[in-house]
Length: 187
Image 1 (cartoon, rainbow, N blue to C red):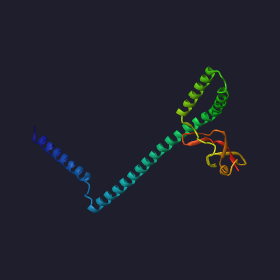
Image 2 (cartoon, one colour):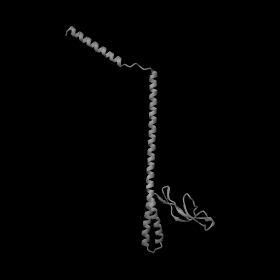
Image 3 (cartoon, rainbow, N blue to C red):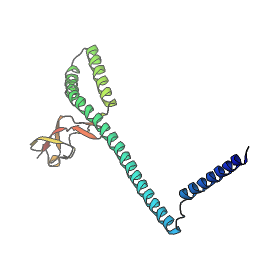
Image 4 (cartoon, rainbow, N blue to C red):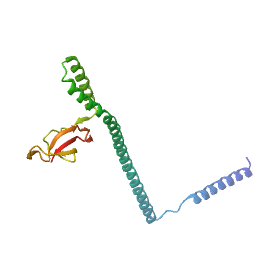
């Protein structure tokens, strides 16, 4: 190599080094003051707290939504059952009336057959949540739980305001009364 070639290489190396130094100087950021860093940290902490609050509120709202829809679904099942049970109540009444008349008969096979069918229907409906309201003659009349059909003169003073006769049985499905018992009260 000639001296000229060696000088060219040295110049190129120096040029590359000076270019590297210029690039490093241009990319270096001036150090920020501690006050500016604290302000940025405070702002980030506030932003984090805001986002965390939004997340917690959204989570709580979603939990409330799940509870509400679950409750609505249960209510829907109950109301669907109510319609079916209401349509079965006249059948139960007919079985009770039929049983009264058939029990007067001497045909034991007929009595046994009707009793088996009636009991099976009642136990099936009871397993679905239907229950009979216990109302008897002589119980005190309560307008919240009984439906008064008529009032008749009480046979004695102690029967005034009490149930004289039960015309139609009452039923409830779960905790809700679906048919109030129809009664006659003493006046």
